Image (cartoon, rainbow, N blue to C red; front, side, top):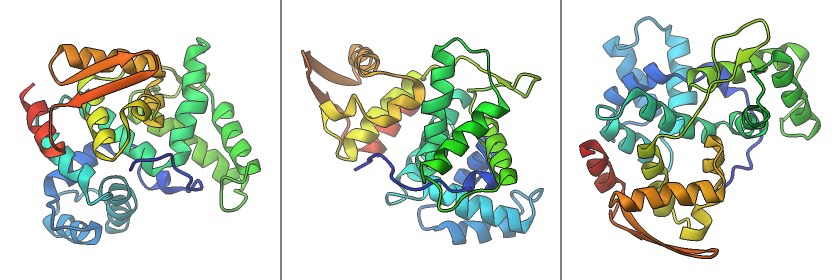
Length: 264
């Protein structure tokens, strides 16, 4: 089951931020028989990402790609590989965003605790100071394995805002920080996430309040509205009565769902 992360914050974002283009290349090179180490040697020998040093490539493949997509029986990589050629860049990047936030709790919490409150308050940008204050509060709350030095706090602040920029939440740096961009979940991403949560064992009622929806600023009512739209398109059947919801899922597994999404 996909559950809320209780992991402490780490610095893995330093290895590669969003890595959207690199992830597409790695998905193309990856096959179900490969673990992260095997994939690294395959990519290194093929010269697929020859512009990247061997040391950095290993960090990207093992500490980023592996932690994000080669988990839960490699299911994220399997599904995304099937979808990579048929989804738009915006749709695919939002799926990368979900898995990156799952693997990096510091990014997840930054998005839900800083980006969306700033967006809802009609702020125009997320400043360097705001990002660093978020990290300092996390350190005080013992969410890091040790106290980070000021230099590390500054770097992690840049990594967080840079990663949000990679995924389309923030724009390029400006004098007042990184401008906030509007960020709305794509409908195919709603389909993917709803089915993935279902197949992971999340109940229909719990699905509506799962923390992954918060990455897109969605409340329970917002998610229910999105699910109802999917029902109108015939992708599932939803029955809602008060606080109780029942969903009839039309696809038997993620492989079948991916086949449907490639044809939409």
